[in-house]
Image: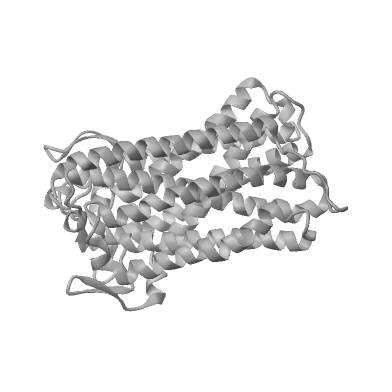
Length: 448
């Protein structure tokens, strides 16, 4: 597999995976928001108004997420033809469970959720919404288990170049719980910032209603809670993965030469060719929970592998290093803006009509920052594990395609156009829903 083919294959796959993860996270966050709104609908009309508007957005995210998943399944066979031969015993059941929960468990209740509100009792419809949220979570869980296993292949043994499952309990553990928590908290963050942004735009040209005020207050609280959760869960994920991924640790520090752990740099300009920092602002020591321990459990006895000893098997140093700093920076800026929005909203009684034009722009910027945090965070996770497809054992070059670079360029161009059209369609349909809101449905035969 040539270097050009490798880069093009990786770009195609990461583009499709990133698109899927964004809409899956948004769908997951909105599903649980809708369930909470439906639970609160019995207490007043505000939550019901909010539910009826946001269930349309959820449906849009679900449809586009489903559309994004199909090319990704095809790419696993076309771009990485040897992958299933190496890990089919692990990957096959996980993908099968994801498909089962998506098409059977979740979809069985989706129609009743979207079209049965006027024919089902409030309790029955609330149960249906909860089952859809649970089905969405289960679908995301199996996908996350697969991604976590690729980062840390526990619960399976490599025998004659084929992985065989040893323990399902271990396989479903590992880094999967922490990574699933990161996805859920990220989805809640995306949902909350989108709620704030859309509410700010809706109330720009018309007075707010009870539903807008309920969404504005809930979104302001939710984004803060989601940020706290994601920071804690990301730290937990780091404590799971970094001790078993020495190359990622070396690139994040950066640790150029093997030896005792170097201090974690706050910011540095890396001279990769000379294997040194051309300029560095030194920071604290790397947390002991993120380091492998010695035979006696002594962190002080740790010797880290240096980047100069990992040539050929190390991740892209600049991308891994910069993405780890960028995600922290974006999270910090988002946290400050979210706290300011919460304080301002609380002082004004969470009344969207009181927002100034600058406030409304700030809420839109928050939505883009939340998207940036998720994109950079997941990008760091994937890039930092290169060149491995299954960390520590199987590289991407071993399982890569034999297609020519010309065909890969063509497919990449088509993929960019398709995903661009899907993103543009989502934006336009979102604008249409924002402009026209919820169209009332006539009652039939006395049903509400």
